Image (cartoon, rainbow, N blue to C red; front, side, top):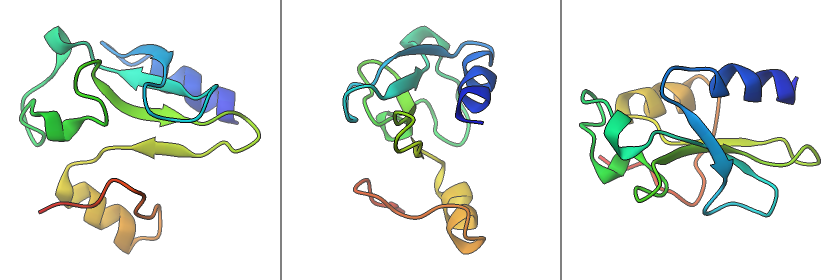
Length: 95
């Protein structure tokens, strides 16, 4: 299931994968290179990323853990928390 999720996200237009710049060894990052950053909810700002320099907006931990960490626009983050689909980590919910 984890590999299916990885493949599905990696196949999204403009998404590139790389080793995570912030997670545990073996974590795989999903990145939007700077030229591919969309406008909209995140406004293309550094708040849209865990590591803005490389465009890392999410990462998937190794299979022994399997957790997915991602950055969401505030309205989607609140919705996910309310529905029990996720929880806060060291990156606080801002706004």
